[in-house]
Length: 207
Image 1 (cartoon, one colour):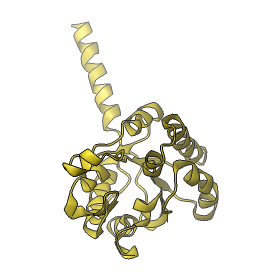
Image 2: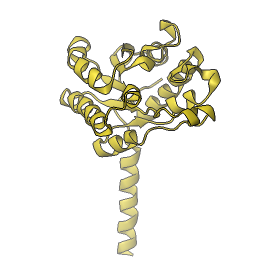
Image 3: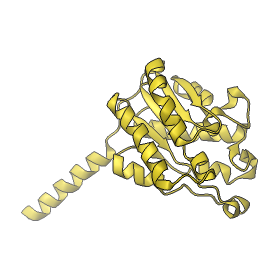
């Protein structure tokens, strides 16, 4: 009986830990969207980028810090100035696609992404990773792309939340993309909707 009671208690503790949510980010707060051309909104109008749409959904001031062509190393270099300039309450990180296209060593990409997380942590800023698919001509042709496993690994090793299967699903559907690696306006709208739901489930957003 004692062993069973202890086992039930352990399960309850584990459930409570898994159900724990993050502190809500107040409306009007600065939230930094750090990324590449997908964050920038290539393939759609500026007003149709996912950061712009996410701002309307959450009430946050989402700063679009997406730069077309940026690798994880480029974004890491830009991050200190962005933190000083905007003092964000949350950072969304969508990076890695250009690393894959340019065949950057996988360990280098992982190290850069972890350095982004470490820098944010040093400033007391929570981060949410947005998983990115590795370019795959066959997967794109048959409409089945999947997130690169490094995002799940980084999430597990650093305790960082990761939003999975959003960009991969969008880029798997021809009606949602402007070219093989960028969403169109409808695709960015899907991204913003899915990210808003994920951020709400994590506790960051109340809307």
